Length: 178
Ligand SMILES: CC(C)(COP(=O)(O)OP(=O)(O)OC[C@H]1O[C@@H](n2cnc3c(N)ncnc32)[C@H](O)[C@@H]1OP(=O)(O)O)[C@@H](O)C(=O)NCCC(=O)NCCS
Image 1 (spheres, rainbow, N blue to C red):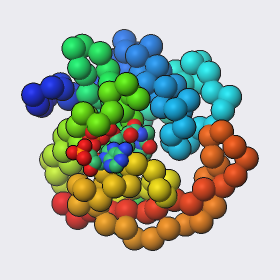
Image 2: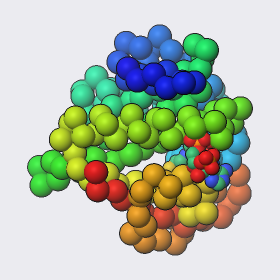
Image 3: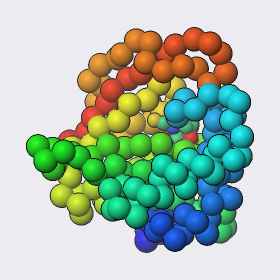
């Protein structure tokens, strides 16, 4: 666990996902309904949100293919990020950053930065020296990643559907050598 002045960052076990399911569900639900491009489109229910954690995340955490980290403030889950290190045999040095989420009520307080620093430390511990990610072009995550040293490899047009509207958005592929 890492303590910073405001947030407690921790790695979540499969059992903890089950215990914290309601709060994790509320975090993803709030981000999707706030317009985040993180894989989902409206309509998106609390049941859909909880199904993401139980169906997509929990089995991969249990299989030790994915590291899930959360940030808590005063006991409440305010953010999360995932490190997918289930890479093929020719990429043992690489991992993918997935689904960096900060609850809309707790943004611009350094939660994402603290989560990313903890994630990079864990990646190093796992022997990973290259992190890759994609993020919707023009979203606030882009300047965040750039401020943390991620470089842009390129932009893919028409990559993902907007959560609210029937239109396709571009995505920016980024990377960082640790
Ligand atoms: C992107 C996101 C994770 C940022 O979380 P956050 O906790 O508000 O970010 P931080 O407070 O740690 O910001 C760190 C730095 O990132 C940059 N940044 C963050 N939000 C920004 C914004 N809205 N506009 C411009 N720069 C921003 C700034 O450089 C900021 O440092 P500063 O506040 O000292 O200027 C959050 O907005 C979010 O959850 N968005 C929806 C989900 C999403 O798009 N995730 C990315 C998926 S790839």
